[in-house]
Amino acid sequence: MRKILINIGLLILAFTVQICVFPQISFLSSAPNLLLIFVFICAFIEGKERGMLYGFIAGLFMDLFYSGPFGFYTLFFVNMGYLNGICTKYYYEDYITLPLVLSIANDLIYNMYIYIFRFLIRNRLNFGHYFMKIILPEIIFTTVTTLVCYRFLLFIHRKLKEWEQRRDSNLV
Amino acid sequence: MKNSKYILAGLSVFCILLIAVTSINSSFLMPLRTGVGYVLVPLQSGVNAVGTSVYNRMRDFSSLKAAQEENAGLTSRVAQLTEENTRLQSEVYELSRLRELYQLDQEYMQYEKVAARIIAKDSGNWFQVFRINKGSADGIQVDMNVMAGGGLVGIVTDVGANYATVRTIIDDDSNVSGMSLRSGDTCNVSGNLTLYQEGRIGLDHIKKEADIQEGDKIVTSNISDVFLPGIFIGYAADLTTDANNVTKSGYIIPVAQFDNLQEVLVITELKNEGEKHAENTD
Picture 1 (tube, rainbow over the protein chains, first blue to last red):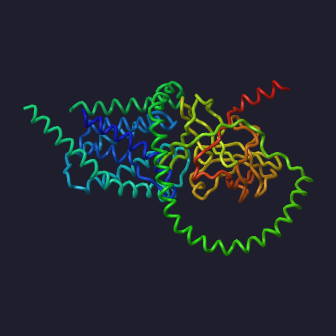
Picture 2 (picture 1 turned 90 degrees about the horizontal axis):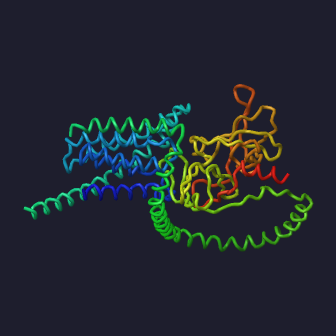
Picture 3 (picture 1 turned 90 degrees about the vertical axis):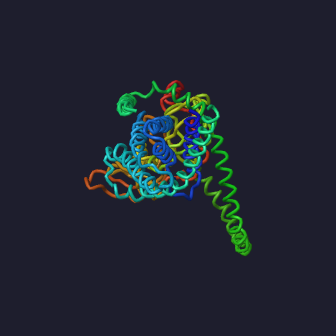
């Protein structure tokens, strides 16, 4: 329970940093998608139920912030949390390749989702341009940030696990 | 857990339903958005302030070195410019005399405005929307026009008690009805993601015979439902006749600077109200 609360706190922080700080840094042509990184790493470490929960919360934040049709982002993040949660059986602590592959795949699908449902349906067909100018930079930034975030979240995960184990042994 | 598949399916269906319902009518979610706004906006303001100050300090430091070098070069230019200045000053007197002759019209109608600070932006590059720290408590309403740097920036699309979301005119979804200040011929100013990255906005639906030329000032037109008339948008450029040989299209170089917006002015007058007011005074 305590772990979920801490993760939700981190989620709010990630969301705030993403929409308040990154846009200020004008020399960045793109910014990493922290919310996406956070949801998929947590889902990857903790399984599909937790992934769905974090995805739901992250999606709600996005939907509350943007005045599009409500549920657009929630739908994506819930499914992403679930699907990444399935990969948790391949989870092995110091194995970084799979999270990186997942980060590329997730960000690509996320941007394709936005492109198809918000741009393609309005007859914006110039996909090559959007891919080079928006999707590719964001994927690169997100993947690099994943390297750091994965270590950080893993560290928190371990600490909390230790803490829980210690508490359990005290009880016994 | 076996149930997780059903939970996922349930949540997905719930989201799709919400998307369908809110596409038609999104007002019933307002209390929820406002409630979350009460919690998140102070947090966003705080993080925003910290982020800005840290970033500014970093930038100050890195620009200090460049400034010292620049200073040496500039000192020598001062002498040169002083000389030039004396010459130009005499021309200023001439200019002011000519201006009086022309009696240039006031460019904008005077609207009541409220200043607001931008506290959050979309970090991805897909949508050009931002959030400001004033909401319905400060008299902001949906469809109010937003300006910065003397030009139109966007329109309020969503208002909570202490925040408002603004969609800029460079957003891919945005369409503004405009007209040439010189001739009064109408056109449509449409935001476009591809063009925005070159610092331009699209300009289309100009009748072929309309008198709009490159360099014309484009302002919001009288016929728009939501935009107040006479707000400066930008300058027309690169006009070409379309393939259908009926309309012309081109680009607008916007006057407002969109990449480093920090503060904006919200015009607290709605188009419909303004017209009612005008009718009453008649």
